[in-house]
Figure 1 (cartoon, rainbow over the protein chains, first blue to last red):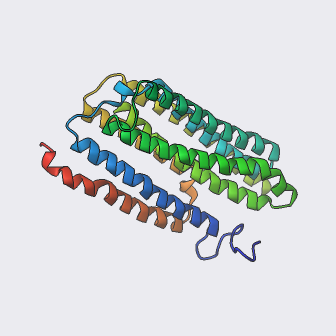
Figure 2: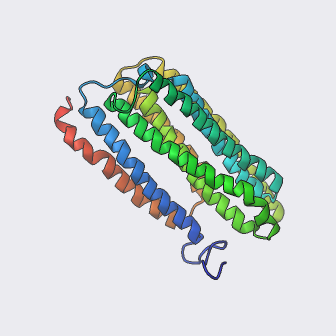
Figure 3: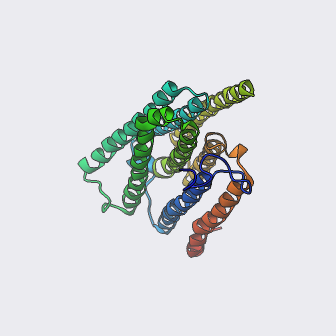
Length: 199
Length: 100
């Protein structure tokens, strides 16, 4: 496998990092620009609007705060999964990566209740500019959560196979890269929560 | 060598726990401040300062930027530059609305 895709487990001499790590950072750079476009849209819409609701007038702040705690906790379990692999403890890795996937699911369930409450009160994306950008940004973020859960779930299921095949280092590197994506999704929510709920 | 690595990981994990507690505390502060119903520009300033600090902690410790190589910082530097352009150039369209 290394012959086909070089520098996956060992760093390149010139860059000092693996190719896969550079690739995930380049991917995250494109993600920054994707979400950056939406944040810029939010700013232009809010500044150009004659009236804009304060987030706490419309949103359920305790539920949003709970989701923030859930996502921060999932970031911790993600780094603990990586640390467990570094300690060569597969059982702990599987517990932590599994918890990360479950916490991602908890986040989506809470988001479902938030969306349901809004639709129940006939508040949809077409109701106002604020709700349009709210549903667009949180919806795009939720898609990223689902993708991250899929990636982490894959390593949860296949981790033992990597281990038994002697690909420990490959698993460590891939989990580290999956973790970088998951933490990025956490960072996006760290900004979405205040701009949509608290300001 | 192996024991040094283990000690290093133990230290890293302790750092994760400190950052975790700090992030939770900052979340509580930002939510608490929102209940003060500050003026809009004050609420924006407080919320964004806290969010930026929280995001920096996640990037530095969980994404382990503190120990990254130059090439990663090069990628990040270019990204931040273009992100700032993307974020602030549209503001120029609203300069006529800003009252000093």
